[in-house]
Image 1 (cartoon, rainbow, N blue to C red):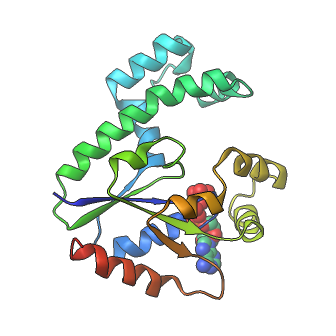
Image 2 (cartoon, rainbow, N blue to C red):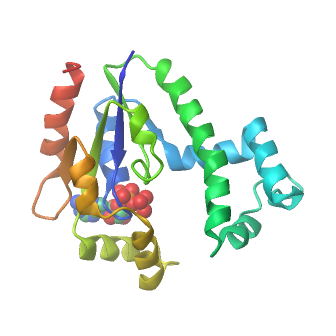
Length: 197
Ligand code: ATP
């Protein structure tokens, strides 16, 4: 079976950008945040769990997730955030494990903003942290997401484990700073992982 590799990093660190480089090298990559959204709308057990916890209002007439309602529910209620995470994270873990077991590759990647925060690193063989200075991250996100204010970006950053701590917890660090090239750093890790250590 493939090695299971986590690819994480704070908001704006560049983890999606790094994931795309691994994809070009042919490495199967699971985008956990996108997949979580898909599962919330399509996985019957998860839908049932969300409906029984948050009520029928959690879904719209057409069966899609009522994001406005759920956002209001969890906004400033840490207990409700915990509840939704306790439903979604196990569903993603299960889906990832099933997906990974079907891949033919020396290793696969799970790209996710929260790997240390959710404890999902325990099910992975190694974790790569994409690390960038705070100022650079805020500037990148403000450029990319025109709907987000600097205050909102800082609020998200405050909810995530600090980058320095993630670097200590990670097995590999990719520094995504303007003066460092990404591709050579990715290739170095790829060479190590593709031989399965
Ligand atoms: P999020 O947690 O919000 O999903 P992310 O960690 O996946 O963020 P990316 O989307 O990969 O981050 O990068 C954030 C933005 O910064 C993107 O617009 C991306 O194109 C840009 N970016 C990332 N790395 C670089 C770089 N080395 N040089 C220039 N632009 C970059």
